[in-house]
Length: 496
Image (cartoon, rainbow, N blue to C red):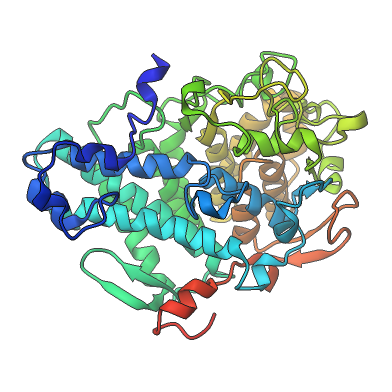
């Protein structure tokens, strides 16, 4: 069954077999162009799905952005960027550096130097997804298309989710603080092709429009794999988008829609080993909304998120590039909270050995990776709903949501005693703290730091910048438009 996943999801170039010469003439044969798809999609309907599956591949592909020639062992799609975000905001400590793949990001060098490849990689990764999504949208009739068949609705809806996802992350990474008037990014949406930076508000409007449209288009779509984006994924991104904009009323509505979609919270047993202990390595975990089923046939080995995080995988986290929870953050997890047991002691001090682990639990044992990748789970929307309620003068709802969330983690009585007395900023601070604890290592702490306009002080277990404090809008917390874009785009002359 798993083998059916294997890039069912084939790279889009494989779909060109049998196409006539005219289709390929004058074009890169490994890239689908909008004109080519539009002309031949009637004869080859799989072409549009092929482009969507190409995006799926990019999201998890080792060395998929800068290419194998770059030989970057921290280039593996969204999860690679997630590690950078966790390190930059400081909740993840680079507590050992034998190979140096994360020195630039942990030392906050890459985010202040536009020549560093980390900026180039993130920029090209998201714009490549936008380019492919735009091609599909154009071929499916354009931004305002009203497809009639369920399959056509699915294709257009999924393409709009991917475009929105990419623009959402670009906005978070390349703008320090939300300002709809600040010109931040070049913008391409089929109808508009602007090499010049446009105001953030225009890009946010496109993200909201895409996700709102996708929710409607995918109303009757029932997917077969969690790697396929659907209505619930769109609602999740729309909740995050509204929250980033400070529209907490609508953020709560969308977060609650996700919660009401039927995914149960990660159980106490799944949160940490021993217990059921499988909540973070198996796509079949019921709380996962969007994730990827990695199988051995995909050939993921050294260059993979698991290799950089899990000491039970034969790769960097085992061999000396240690990623640990910041010890100041760890100290704020109360005794009796099951999440405190996610992190190791002794030689594996504060590494996530009981949260992210290959089930065989043999140190350095998993060589060909078959543990799965999680991108979105329902638990984060309990936290986001509570945050949105607390920030929109609905503290009773915020407290009720937090008590429900914390009960399987600390027990009902403790959850109530922790949350009930809180109000105002103290309640908002607690929700932010719980978000940092719960989502550690999943790439969401950076987003929460910016939403909460927080300043984070690093603990003593960081190889770089230990003890230093950084505000959400400091230069170190925002990526730079890369040198390649500035050199090749005459409409951009600098960062601001």
